[in-house]
Amino acid sequence: MKKIDLFCSAGMSTSMLAKRMQEVADAHKLPVKVNAFSSGEIDNLVESDTPDCMLLGPQVRFMYDAIQEKYGDCIPVGVINSEDYGSLNGERVLKAAILLIKKGTNKQKA
Image (cartoon, rainbow, N blue to C red; front, side, top):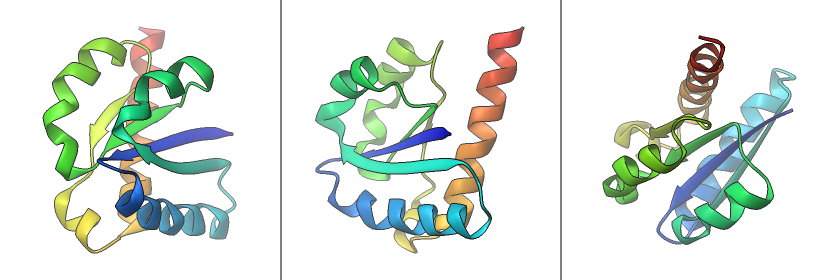
């Protein structure tokens, strides 16, 4: 089971998107678990339950460089497309997360 964690300022707005992404994953019988959290929880979550992918909401995109530098070697990190985020397009964001995971897996094999 792949774990995809979404992060925003408080974890509230990403929770709606996470639910949509989970519905798409379940409909396609994909072994994926999508959760949403506050960006303040990143360090604790990585230590306790390392995700396979971390996606940042547009409102915390300013954190991308720091998170990528800290965790990018072991966990793929991305920023959710603003339009997909605003429209709660769970399918597109899920596809982006899966691509990030695949790229990260290939990077680790190299």
